[in-house]
Image (cartoon, rainbow, N blue to C red; front, side, top):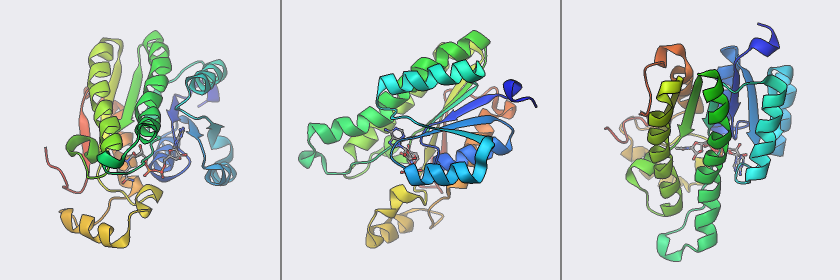
Length: 246
Ligand code: NAD
């Protein structure tokens, strides 16, 4: 397929962990994939060397509206379209709520929730113009049921669920589907900071007795952006080893 005809997918935070696995699945599906990162210089360089022209890598802090605007200006100028947006970039800053200060609250909301707003705010008009779009918001089981020490993160991820459902309603008529994927505990850098004794306790609570893999989340995203999922919108797809069943 000539480059200019390839559907374009943007994956935020796509140079490592779950985002990287999603980017690789979408590249294999034939999409022109653009990934963003913020601090992961080393992984970005490594990905660029490995995948070369198969991927476009841009440093963009999604918590800054002007940086997101620059990103979309460039993508729309270069490719003229955005078909898929995967809002994957996310951070944690854990603390029990009574010890949490406003900076720690805002830092997480700014990336996970406001960053997603800035990206959707630019992607949706471009998708509406072409009567097609797929948006996937990477939420979390923590947004569905809460988690000790993660009030800021849980609020951001629950906020994504409300955003997902509303955007799905508003844009269905324009051929745009909007869904959330809710991973449980997935083996990436984000969970590697959890102390070993806590990890063992978490694994004991998971019916499948193991953490998930980034690839298992990426495959769910691959399905939701495919034509097979064309009638699915406003949904939460759980990839959690049975940790939460509803
Ligand atoms: P990770 O820490 O390995 O990767 C996060 C990515 O986000 C990195 O590439 C990082 O550069 C990027 N990022 C962080 N701040 C950014 C910013 N301001 N602007 C742009 N990019 C930024 O994490 P992961 O485990 O791969 O998680 C990916 C997503 O999945 C996150 O939204 C996370 O909340 C969610 N999630 C993860 C798990 C898990 O167990 N790992 C579970 C549920 C949900």
